[in-house]
Image (cartoon, rainbow, N blue to C red; front, side, top):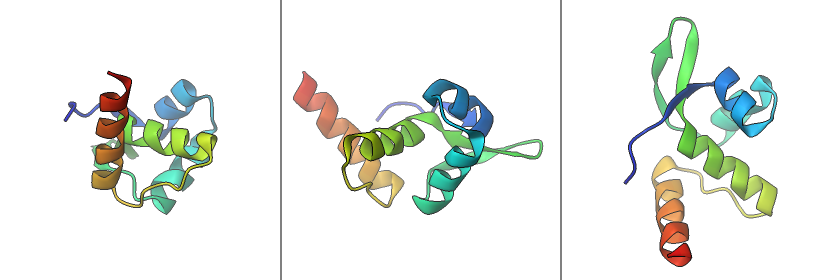
Length: 81
């Protein structure tokens, strides 16, 4: 498993070229992995948000739990190797 990459919704939105409200909606809808808080902002795992974005973009069903998304990322890495 890769180490967590902490980001706020605003930071993730910049990296994924989305709006912060979209990131927060995905985090709520798909139970994105929350790593904590930075002041008033929630900190998420970027890899988890990126996997959600990929599933949506590719037209796949988004796995509902972070653990299932971890397994999906691992399977994709193995297939690419």
